[in-house]
Amino acid sequence: MLCEKPIALTTEEGTRMLAAAKRSGRVAMTGFNWRFPAAMQTLHALVAEGAIGRPFHINVRWLGSRWAAESAAATWRMDRAQAGYGVLGDNGVHVVDLVRWSFGEFKRVTATMGIPYPQRAAPGVQRPPDAEDWCLVLGELTNGAQVSFTSSRAAHGVNEQTLEAYGSAGAVQYRLGREAPAWWAGELRLSRGGDFEPVAPRVPVPAVESREAFEQIGRGMIAPLVARFLDAIRTGATPSPSLAEGLRAQVVLDAVAAAAARGAWVDIPQLTA
Image 1 (cartoon, rainbow, N blue to C red):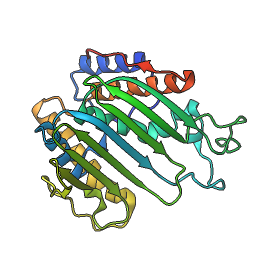
Image 2 (tube, one colour; image 1 turned 45 degrees about the vertical axis):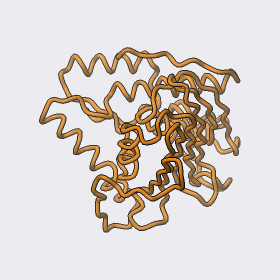
Image 3 (cartoon, helix red, strand yellow; image 1 turned 180 degrees about the horizontal axis):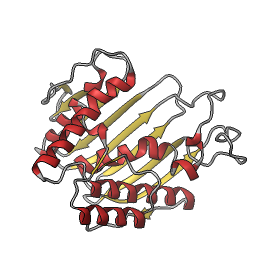
Image 4 (cartoon, helix red, strand yellow; image 1 turned 45 degrees about the horizontal axis):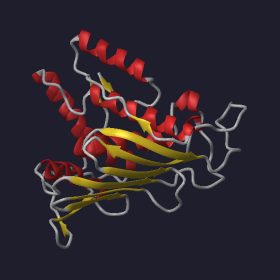
């Protein structure tokens, strides 16, 4: 069972799903495909090796322009009842996963969200949209690192991800834009206290001849994830990203939504699963 990123489950429902997957004896995995650009895989390895030391600050941006214009057609994604979340479910859940995967668990969050065009309701829905188009999140990890990330699907002229992390021994800068050849590899630079220098990927970069974005994403990022899934089926090993990691990301999303609604900091429950 290969599950898409969780966007509409409650924590209780996710916990039941995880228990059911364990009872079934089947292999279960979460589709966090944005772990798999070669530069992101290399970043994770460098951080695990201690290249930046103890993390202090982590800054992330995930910006897209699909609904930046007022004239852009509305979809079901504008309706929280159908989508679960807006940009938090589209992009923010991946940001949460990338931070958790390389830098540690979230301890608490606060957030603000917005909808730039309240008249752009989902088709067939007779009320204003209620799924956020942008969000700004501040967080603290259990190791004390501070996190800030901005996620938007209403940013004209851009389609990119960036992640910067600064620590006691150095820093990393990651970028994934859509304008360069073989963009699906990403770009990575490392500082060990001095100037930033480019870092070559440690894993192969898939060759993709097609210019179709979904084909590039599929071959560049989803194929490596599926290969890991199939390997787990063959070997019986627990794959990563696991279903439990998907649940932990969902718990953070729920806290972000609660923090935005309350205008306050919200603590993250620490799951044992």
